[in-house]
Length: 427
Ligand code: HSE
Image 1: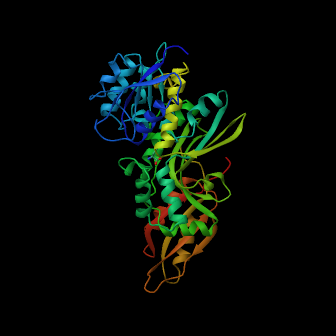
Image 2: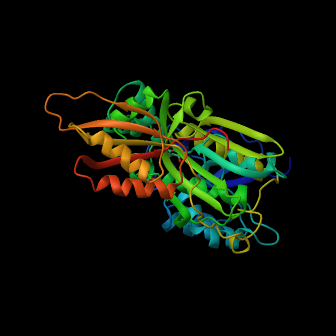
Image 3: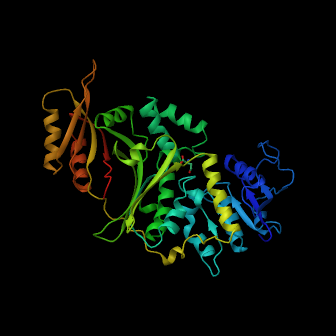
């Protein structure tokens, strides 16, 4: 191979330190680490950095004469990370990043800088689903297919929390603490549990799969904060689990793409239900291939470092690609059509007195929502309201919303109603 590509790395956290260690061990022939930048130069990261130039200001990597490829692992939607990536692209230097928040928020400007002639590579395999090569699968392995739906588990922290609540009977807080200790969670775990992180990953996938410009405003996002231990246990009585599912689906009626991140009831035989702990997964439904299911470690230093190394390897071999095939201004608008009809899991609390169940079912019926299954739990001493769960038949989201509104105004129905769509394994 000709001259080695000189790599400059900004950010030496869990991921950065592992990337450097692997590169120093010769994991990517053709790449050599020449410069690094981090907040704390002195911290022991378990890797010998004495031969690398330490750069106090990460922005200097963009102009550095001893850096050919910039690896941004600082994180953050804007600020220094964004400035570094912009400066490197302007200088014509290929960039590798794991930063989904930045890509989701600044896709337009970054695509303008990357999708030029000749393109300046901006590689981001690590930004979505950690160590699973979903970006490569979508844009290389499935080139020529027409995608109809992407559905996946894209946040390891949420999946870890839901799995641990289910298997180890932990509370939400205990499971979140474990996820943080294991290094899966974002610096601000609100981004994980609110579904934002999964939404950012979804719009990036959707840009590749459907050619729509990333637009977080068009993603309907609900996090897992409302999921209680009783929901996990009710789900089990329907032979199901709860998963935070990120879904982008082409809607035939409008031609638009519907984007949603939402906790869903997933029947146990479905492949997504088998995805446990911090694992991520992506199901791609497309023609002519049919359906592909990818699963693997989606969070944590090792998984992310693996994807960063793969991108560096591509770039040193000359396979680097622009952010997208064209600037986002030339891509389709990501419309936000109405949600698909679905079965729903409805958890209500009904007053423990005659007629309250009849009232609830009457309201559902009046709004055209038909019940398929029902489970009611017996009362504990002193309970005024008893939890009851309905699984509905397929209904339009508008009918469900109308029913929920009517249910919430009833005195005999506690107004904390939880409605989760049931995941349909096949479209
Ligand atoms: N906090 C993220 C997750 C890490 O839990 O999936 C990878 O983006």
